[in-house]
Length: 408
Image (cartoon, rainbow, N blue to C red):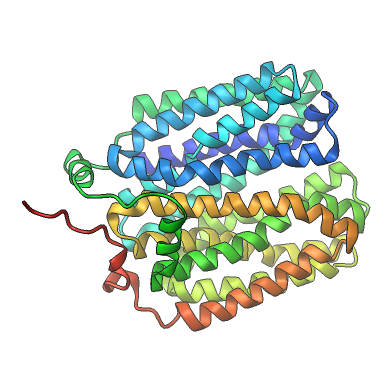
């Protein structure tokens, strides 16, 4: 693993560790200020909602000014957000801390853009799989560490997360080189940029290749974030698991995701096209989510969660890789930021609706809805994505490229 990519892996790992330290504790922290369950849901949704707005802008700025400066800005925002969280003395301050971190904390899409700059088409999915592996490893260690620190007070994990973010900041400032050359940044700055907004999003979605992959990403994000958002509630309602048992199950999923994204993705992308892997992953996730909906006991749940972790761990890096190949090289940061926004938006919606589905319809409802959705995604992939030319050898929708500047 080349040094810059190894540093990016460590950067994402430390970033996710900081995030996962405090995420499971936020509901308890908020309740110390008298927050109701509905308000806790809004608090959890506030961070991805802010990311939804800011991620494309951060990605576009990184296309023009470089990945490293925007990574530094993003990490500084994370440090400040966690410090505000640790010093919070009201519910309002909790919201401020999470919204600030969401607006400036576009770390994942910036890391993906850095890897895209540093890898060729053949190795891109494997490189992006490193980010998924870092996520999985962070979510294995972080919640347990945060739970241990919480015995000293809910502010302590927040300060620990801020400390980890400072380590990240020092690492990026001292050791991480810029992945975009000065000549490349100058060329990007000289090109006209379409305005950001809903019209730009619709323009990207209308493109045959890039729009198809983003549509698949949207469906996948809805289905998988529904699992992530309500699994703890599902485990309590359907299987009567306590918090410790639920944590062990999520650790099991995290370990499997690390193995898939850190090892299996590179092996599979050498043997199969990313379009076919997308079809396979979508179909497998559909079956897994349906199995999750109807799992009658814990042993069967563990069986069902293995292919669910495999499919989720496969689709994340493969779809990100396809996006970078279909996007014009001038817009990689913007497109990855848009992909991050899609994930953030779906997390907002599923966090708000998943609990309602379980309480009103039953614990099976999110899994059934997600399974049906992924069956549609698999069909869409077969009809729209498989016939498309290989991105590395075709122009596909190079209409996504920025227009050449007019010469005087």
